[in-house]
Length: 162
Length: 162
DNA sequence: TTAAGTGCAAAATATTTGCACTAGT
DNA sequence: ACTAGTGCAAATATTTTGCACTTAA
Image 1: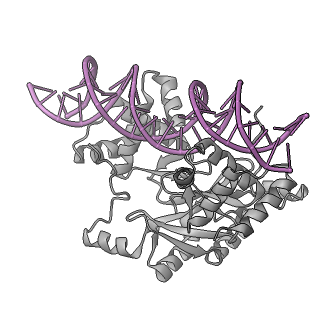
Image 2: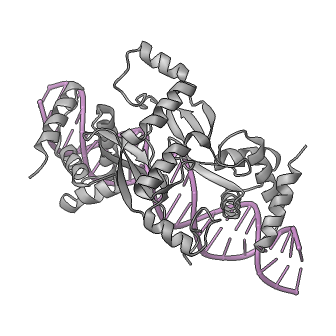
Image 3: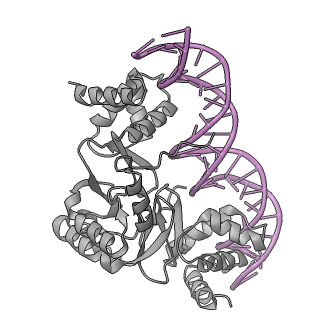
């Protein structure tokens, strides 16, 4: 019921780099796998803490950095600038993140390829088009926005907390 | 030699919202105009401080937020998650940011339009494709990377400080 | 055994906020 | 005058780091 696949993969990768497998690292990897999409370090820490409260958040950060260097994990920046991590296993992909309701939708990279090719041809620029999430408004929120005739404001004026 | 255009525009926009024009706001707007591309709040503050050291960074943040609400300024997230601001004047645009050398290159949005249309058609998603910078490697850095046969590592291993 | 890994607390960075004072209009 | 705006300092939030202790191999 766990991810022995990733775990073994990870142990191997760690060994190659003279690193060790530890319960903390295992837990963090499992936590990553238990989320469908991108997760913040904070969320991973909470998930791990729920079982093993003594695991420190700095260990989470250190492990994520390590996993990224090993190529098992990738990170992305979402709208608010918070770093989001996910398993690299499934190959490159993208997310559409709605500014209105926060919903996320997966997106195959094949849709981005034309743009990537264009950038390469025109500018010789090798774009990493999966590094950032694409933000905007989902179908539902677009509809809601149109109702309000709210065509001008770019963001839902985030000053509200008293 | 200054930007009376923007300044007047700003004063008008401020008035419409019951806000006032102040020297600080003027200075911050000028600083924004004096940079070719995107700038961090920090950089704006430094620029302003060089002339008027008593201007506080929190004022910079508050002004930038206000200018954004007024539609005069937009922000973007670059690779490291730092928020970058720029004048909205020139209309929507994008930047290619090189991970290798940090160089920035402007990019017309027209190149992004096909993708935008595709996302709208396929998912009903109204993407804001200017909200994030596109990261990758510029022509020069691509060449350098190929030399090193460095095809596997995704990032230039950022652990170096002693 | 022994170098790698961890927890903890503190530092560094980026941004926001409460509050008393200042200054546009 | 009256309220918006500012400086300051302190609070938040996120991520990093130094160090002594623990542990995988």
